[in-house]
Image (tube, rainbow, N blue to C red; front, side, top):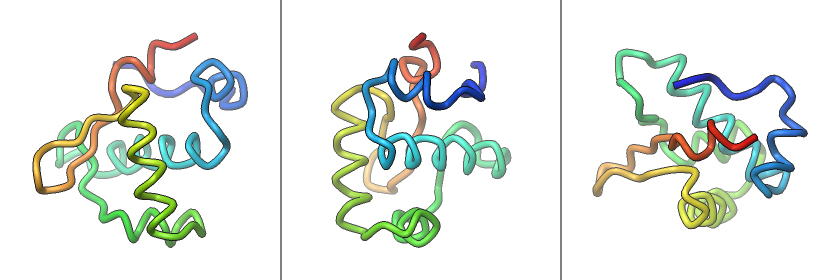
Length: 92
């Protein structure tokens, strides 16, 4: 799996995402890279995403729902693990 493009504006437009949606997607991606021992899933609590991005927890919840609806993230069971899907990486 490749990394997200450095040209995030172009990537964001291609994915059809808002700035906040892209920020959350990049934050998930970065958390996976930083915690490689966790594998390909982010285990960071949603409240931490909210604090880091200065968004409400409700906003994070809504953004995660929309990213999942677009097929850009996948949630694993009740534990809250989140994975960025290949669809997010392969959109040009």
